[in-house]
Length: 107
Image (cartoon, rainbow, N blue to C red):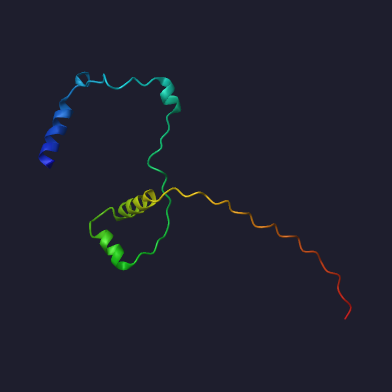
């Protein structure tokens, strides 16, 4: 689809009135739906420092702004292509015992 046809479609949609839109195939959403509704996307981002090979970073930056978003998308695609992992139960480390003072030995 060309940019020209997209622009003309967007212009046509902008001129359209709400009353001209056919909603017959969409069931109405009641207040119960909105009480339960939550925002699920996008997930929260976390800032971190990552070290990448210079050529990899140059490749990512070569397409202009948004290279960090591209890194995220690449990693998400890799993550989602993997089968779900069963989480391992991590045994908690044993608690350290409080040290007791030893009686001083005679020399």
